[in-house]
Length: 187
Ligand SMILES: [Zn+2]
Image (cartoon, rainbow, N blue to C red):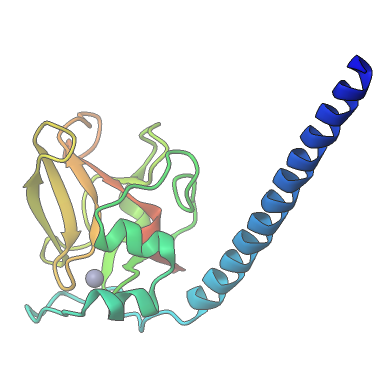
């Protein structure tokens, strides 16, 4: 009698377990599909300006829906929703190639690898932008204290923050950037 009850209970648990396995299998399938379509979207990137392009003062404005069409989910989250990449788990924190970092939203040159330095933070760090005119800085209070938020001057894409804590660098500044806001092209 008692053991019968246990067997029944085990059967019930097994059913629940296999149900969980099935659900996680389905969701895994979904996430790989999402990655696939994300990769496809990545290929249809914006037109890149020349590396010495200086912003002419004309803004680019698009609706959220329009941005979603040309950006991957991660790119949209960072650039249009002020998101942040994960430290040490993003495309360019450890990139040592010589080249230019362009805005993923509008293709304007933003950073140059010759201004990149090892900050040890896990995010790509630069001591200055490629051109002061191509970026804009405003103050945010997102994590409870004032920070200087950096964005693309032309399209408003959120890029990261700038801190005054790099005394060993020529400007003393650390532009702490998100990889998801960049398209990198070798020189
Ligand atoms: Zn831009």
